[in-house]
Length: 189
Image (cartoon, one colour):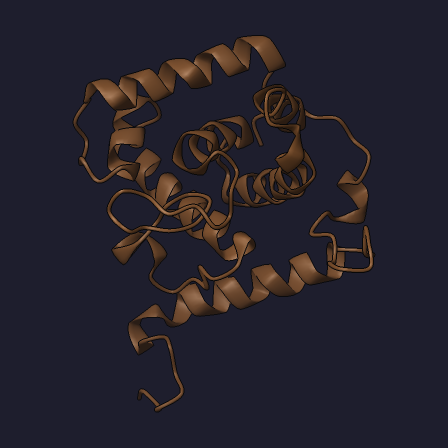
């Protein structure tokens, strides 16, 4: 039964339960504030660790260092969420770089917003008004694409709404991922 204040339909009860459990676990693992103005989304066990994703973000922001601090915070959320969903964090980092250049308030040509530019079915059941929700919806959608199309450019095409085809843009993104893997290593799961 749907109540006036409910944002989830009954058939999405499992997704809602999973999201609640995920964010409760995430909230427990998140620690202290980095500054007075905002809380850090970085779990205490990942705080000062260097990783392929953080190295990739630092490399990506060499020419735009002003956004590096917020991008590194988002990178930690990417790592945590990708590992939780069983997706390679470096692949998610490449997608975020291509979709939004690590800007949480980015708006695409078609009006989609956020770090991973998800909308419609991809963002259903997620709070995409926060960077954490944007990342989780994108990672969940990517995982679905990997399950349906296999890992590779076809999964990226699924993510971009092209089904299990292999368009040039998806192949280009996959090559960016392979370059990042060679350059920064890979920590799958």
